[in-house]
Amino acid sequence: DIELTQSPSSLSASVGDRVTITCRASHNISDFLHWYQQKPGKAPKLLIYASSILQSGVPSRFSGSGSGTDFTLTISALRPEDFATYFCHQSYSTPLTFGPGTQVDVK
Amino acid sequence: QVTLKESGPVLVKPTETLTLTCTVSGVSLSSAGMAVSWIRQPPGKALEWLAHIFSNDEKTYSTSLKSRLTISKDTSKNQVVLTMSNVDPVDTATYYCARTTLFYRGDYMDVWGNGTTVTVSS
Image 1 (cartoon, helix red, strand yellow):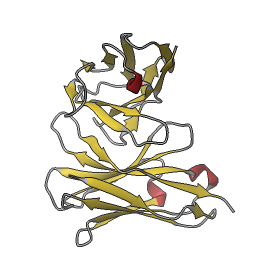
Image 2 (image 1 turned 90 degrees about the horizontal axis):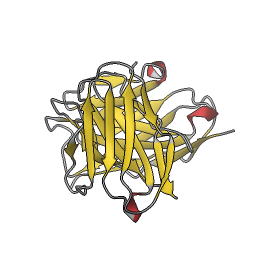
Image 3 (image 1 turned 60 degrees about the vertical axis):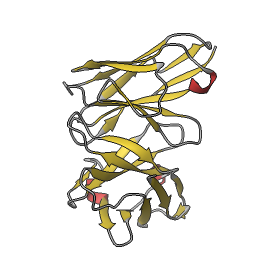
Image 4 (image 1 turned 45 degrees about the vertical axis):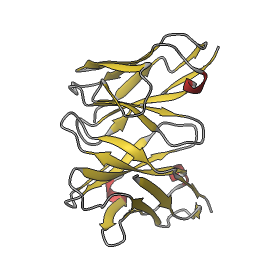
């Protein structure tokens, strides 16, 4: 199975901050890596697929990069609605797996 | 507009079989290029993929839960059903279904249901 790790597990930030979250895969997954945002009590929402493609309707302050085993999600300028938990997910091989999540909260 | 809605029991007893239904609207389960996945999330924990089924009826399961899961679809009702046998309190979770779009650089789950919360307890 491909294991995904995320760092940090949590971070505190202020509105306007640049935030970077890292996801590392245990094996080469090319760019078959996707990012989701989840708010408490809500379903996950797709932000970025195939490492760097912004899902329709997602603000351009979100961006993704990486290939192989190392990936990043960047929020260029944090907005109040961005405080949430972020998960990475690989679909390179089954079983599909998710990272443990990174919680972004208010500093 | 594509929507998915999960339904099933709120409470299940240990050793029983859990049956969950995902009703899909706005797209046919027979459409090429898509699948439906089931994912769960125990309280305060991470997401765990369980299974998916493609329009051609191909199915894949979580390695650790494969012996307990069955996924199927009813195209006449546009529903996907997941059964989990011999449930245990550790299966307590919110269960989501999600439309999976097939993409050459990795299939991704782009439309999710709101989830249904299942508690396993005697």
